[in-house]
Length: 496
Image (cartoon, rainbow, N blue to C red):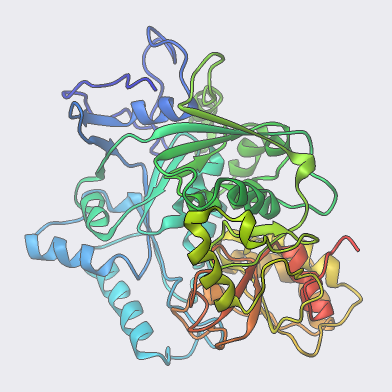
């Protein structure tokens, strides 16, 4: 890895209309040699760097929600500080929000307090981009960012949320930060970070029929395990990645953190530019032309080196499900749970504990197993394309009587599209109810909790013990597998 910028007197980067930096004079590689996509963006945002220490990195876009921000705002108050660049922070309520009756007072007192505090902080610090419950731009933070044009190529993006890596789908450096770092960004628009190592993961060939971006990601995590990319920032490449839509790319980058990566990213291309163009906060007119010229330079140079490279064959991937209590415990839907002798000796105790929690046995097939809940939503799979896939499968069918289904759009914009495209009618005719936007059953911080002992096929990102409620048993899957389970009432291969 080349640490190309160790100038401790480096100025703030030049800012374009979207807040992202422009390339150095002479263009990328001018005296620098071949660079990775990550190197180009990181180096353009270095304000100062301590030798063998952290880098002070300028942040173009900060996303903020009600859970990780209260202490940060309190810290500013205690020190008598203002928010340095309030227009660079986008605030939305999502984690604690109910997904029914959002026009009524929030019943849960803890959630209500979180949301009230969030509103008070937005008002006190004069935050112009605050989207409370009911606002047309309200929704899950990692969904409203791209759909409103806040997320753009070449940016550095942070949020007090681990799945900030989602925004890397646009060719941005995006990563989660802690509450103390949220305060740092609010106060200075910069953050101290240790430069990560770089990894490139290439997917050769095309995905098989019925295989989604979620399956690709779960397959990758099952191979790397939850710690296989620790310390790395990952660039995804190859034919399968290039063939993904922007929403599918967001799903892949979203799950980067689940294999321990600091973040994931995909070089921008025409699909990226077409997605961003025309969105409310995207550049316009001459500024668009200027930024587009810059964005087209954002790709890894030929001959650039990564600290690690991995290659997968896309044809090896089938629809995936998880069987354990972390996203790395995944398998093809037609496969059997590994037996104990297939598990590394160091991990056997946690493996057995995981199967005990899930109520599964080693060597068992899960295809055909009865389930209780289906959750379609979250920052992983709560976009309009996910609802299109789900609705297309359930059209003309009926929801299984034994299944409780929570269908939760990731934003009010997604909810609007669901209705405009006729998906709402398809879903209701099949026996499904559409809920209101929010993080919902992704995590047990709101009313949508799976009861103890019940099985949920979930399109979210984590299947930890208690993640969807105390004692809940989570099986991660993509929208197509979730749709098949909702109709059949059991784990079902959607291809059959």
